[in-house]
Length: 638
Image 1 (cartoon, rainbow, N blue to C red):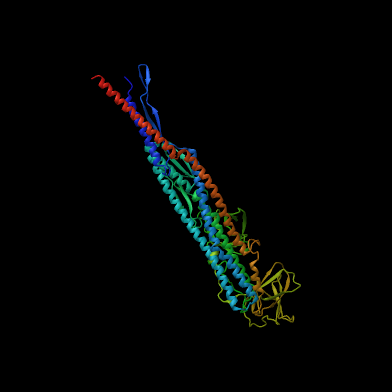
Image 2 (cartoon, one colour):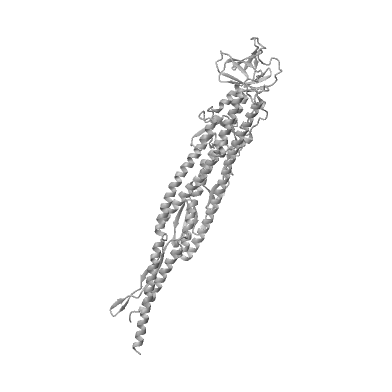
């Protein structure tokens, strides 16, 4: 048996044709997303022994391999997760920063305009036009705070919609990956198109969440969501679902089915775009909403309290300029009960001191028989509250009221004292005469120990006998040890024997005032409640609120609260930009590493194309030579 030259040529042509096919496929897929370069491995056929010598019998393509670097691909997926997280954070924070810089600029402007008009009121306290300007500016400030809250609410809704959209896409990808796993179980890992599609989906999925890929036989890959929950196991998927927030339904949370039960996931820890959206909502947006609510409460409370200390143009004790800080409009959504509670208690929060509010969120935990722990979720600090009747006291500027039902051991509540305040801020006063620019004339006796203070709470009847006016002042001598008082006229004559009163108020001679005592002593106060249109003493106190450090335990003014929130958002946006740039660098490095291994190099493929073309032509030439030799042999024997 001789060397089969024709067959050798045939195998060479077929091998070169296969090489050209693989090379051509690489070139045509150079722009196909997720495509991995393929290489045909060519091997020699077994030789044959002829005349004591071994002669080759040609070659064949033994395998077509997909060039794949598992380590580089894992690095790329991690880089994709980090980049998507950074890009989403930067995008959301930039949006919020723009909201504070554009719409939010009306808030400091509103504060400035209000205090400017109050300065004018100090100069002309009886001018109705200026008084109307003060109320108009107060309305503009309330509207500005309402608008920034509307913008923040819009951000909350949009972010929740984004979370929902990303979650649905994650589930769609998980379903498709499970389908591919099923096909790979049938065909094995030789189907490179399925493997490329699988890698493309895994890369896309890693942009939405951080994943852990577990390789299995035949190219099958299971996927874990971070390291906490299985998302794809073979052909099975464990869908991630959106559940209403607990205890606030408008803040949906993630959950996944494990063992037939829905288990909550911490959305801030899932990584990728989804994790960034949750982090933005929980760590930036919600605190900003609470802090704007803190500002709204502080403004309303400060002006309303000063109104109570003054007299308006009608000679009445001032009424609220803004709606009360504890009315239902301003207090909606302050307390939420967790769904896991076994007790029946319904709680509400009542603001007692806006200066002590922090603009943060708390968690109340009850442990039988009588332990009430209030945890600041931002700092982790814990306070023990004290129950008196149905009121829990000891918190930062607010009390909690048990409105109905009873608590069971282990019950938990989320407390947001400033929630809803910015949306509910309104101007309650409509009559400019109601601005209490004047102060009631109250003079403490020089011999007083300072243990007692008084405040007029209402003018009941200016026509009452001996109502105190200029020239007919009344002096009240108050004994807080026995809860009695005696009244003297301007000449020092007693108007009757000492009378008892029920703390904290005394009503007599056409007006009512409140007594606050820090000790037991006898002190004297002289009252002159004349109507004084030109009196600006209380208006002056209102004007001083501009610089007063009334917020955050005396550390911040109203403007400081807003500017601090705005600056925090701005700093986070700038930091997110730097993080995004770093993530882009890491991602590009990982992409370059993958492309250098698995990507198609057109220059290299063009060289291969020429090489395999030449080998094809050479093999074809062998076949021609073989044919010519065969023809010559036939001719020679004729």
